[in-house]
Amino acid sequence: MIEPLPDVLILPVVRAALAEDLGRAGDVTAQACVPAGTILSAALAVRRGGVVAGLDCARLAIAELDPKAIFQPEAQDGQTVAAGTVLAMVRGDARAILSAERTALNLLGRLCGVATLTQDYVDAVRGARARIADTRKTTPGLRALEKYAVRCGGGLNHRFGLDDAILIKDNHVAACGSVGEALRRAKAAAGHLMKVEVEVDSLVQLQEALAFDPDVIMLDNFTLQDLREAVAIAGGRVVLEASGGVTLESVKAIAETGVDVISVGALTHSPRCLDIGLDAV
Image (cartoon, rainbow, N blue to C red; front, side, top):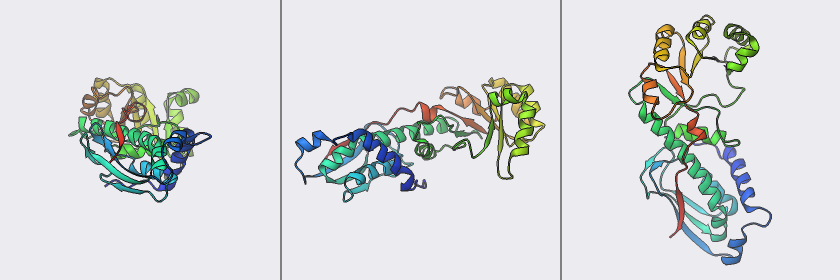
């Protein structure tokens, strides 16, 4: 059971999307074609199988335009469903439902796509110790929702923003002069609850980083052989995260090197939206 996001985190996204779609005059098509007071019953159904995420986005999009609408989920976030599965039934003011339809389906389809792709990666490394994590390569404004969808697909969340963990990247190292100096400064500045991760691009930098006891070392674009050597060198002293250009075709081999975490930007920057329709019944 996936703990749902509170409505207060979802509503700003839903309201902005509705405002974008409704424009200056509202849904002129619904106003012209659908008599006021008409009641519509409809099903939200998937056209291809996948993992459900984002049902609350659809619920809130419809509720914003018709607070009295009945939204009855028939599936739950985190559930794997087959093509044709009805995710929810809705009944309410026809104009409102038709006006909210695209916003509801856009958000729901996007999040289901993220969850489905995440599950594909999780399945690909099943049996290995490595866990699949997301990155900050999210759609602007949708980070909380997309990271929630990653959890629905069985993945882990990396840091949410720049303020919840120290992650020293190559440009930070360049600005400081060395991996060691960057880590020295970070460790001096970090509070007792703040984790420190550093990105390295060679085994030499790995050795340098280990001397400063970071919490996590990111192995950036390492070859499989170098990943195996890094695992041996670290000897379990630190969490090792593999990152950079990870694909569904390569992720299993990366996991088999013994790393602890594999971060995949594609989970949120390149998912294929799940095709979901709203059909009158």
